Image 1 (cartoon, protein in one colour):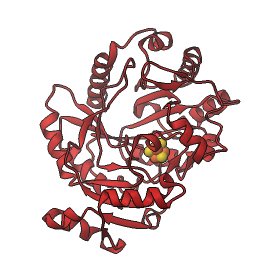
Image 2 (tube, protein in one colour; image 1 turned 90 degrees about the vertical axis):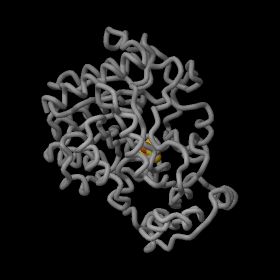
Image 3 (cartoon, protein in one colour; image 1 turned 90 degrees about the horizontal axis):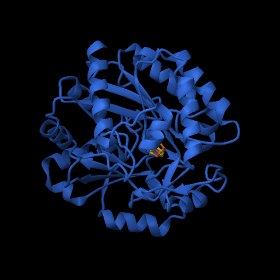
Image 4 (cartoon, helix red, strand yellow; image 1 turned 60 degrees about the horizontal axis):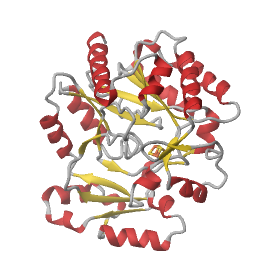
Amino acid sequence: MAIRDHFKAVYYDPSLEGLPWGRREIERFLPFNPRPKGREELKEEILSLSPDPIGDGKRVLYLAPHRGSLLKPCPGTKGYSCCGYWVGNVAVGCPMDCTYCILQGYLNEPIITLQLPWGKFFDELRAKARGPRPLRVGTGELSDSLVLEPFLGFVAEAVEFFARFEGAVLELKTKTDRVEGLLPLEHASRTVVAWSLNPPKVVEEQERGTAALMARLKAARLCQQRGYPVAFHFDPLLHYSGWESDYQMLIEELFRWIDPRGVIWISLGTLRFPKGLEKIIRQRFPRSWILSGEFLPGEDGKLRYFKPLRIEIYKKVLSWLREYPLKGFIYLCMEREDVWEAVFGFRPGGTRGLKERLESHTEEFLRKW
Ligand code: SF4
């Protein structure tokens, strides 16, 4: 997907015209003929005119001043251990289109918004990251960290900022192979480049518009060769007929391309989604098989595979990963303490305990890097 050809329209909030930095942002997008339009009007237009507002909204870029905070703690979920991550929401929305993407139900605007000015993100970081250990910060929660690059130019600025900043480590999480802009940068190992991985069958059938598995692995190898710590997220892990051999082969392929000793962390998370998302998935992707399993609501209202199945999946994936000399921290994303105990033999101590473990691991790993 060439991102320049992807957007069919670029709009901006009219209030940007009254701000010096706002006018500069508009000018940056002049080749796309940006037009002023109120956010509500744009939203109404897409919702009323399009048979698939979520899909069509992915082709509209909206530049808007952001009045709140751009740096936020990951919202986590009640009753499940979160890793104490911070998220930088510079872009909200994603041009790719995965069947299971929770943004389809989570975002109330079917457009891709650039929340400006992104300099605020760096100011907020300077004010927030004053603890004894580096905060882990990512930009891939409400979008994909690299899909709009190098078109946006944010990532080059961010990598260079983090290279000189002791208080935090940046994670760029992606399903693309768009790393060309990263390779020449001075990163001082303070940026982790991370890929979400799934077997080729899942990529082809459930992750529309993303890079093929091999392209992601080749991109990861290039980053590793340029000295970046890399990370991987097996999330969502899907249960289907043949999943075991598919994930086993995926892990074998991963370590054919990647030196396991340079992997800083790996997360595992089985498919989970809020109740309302089911209807959206069935409407938008009637041929998708991801909902064919049995799901039960958890304490946080999200639907998940039932606990014994989740434990079985985690244990098997963990055993395949442990065949390699990994030094990275392997953790479960949004899981219960009893599931941790069944899989790893210990409880991380809730969100606080998991955050401390990950932060001290990060510090240690980077010291030896
Ligand atoms: S790449 Fe991530 S953010 Fe983009 S559609 Fe897929 S799940 Fe959603």
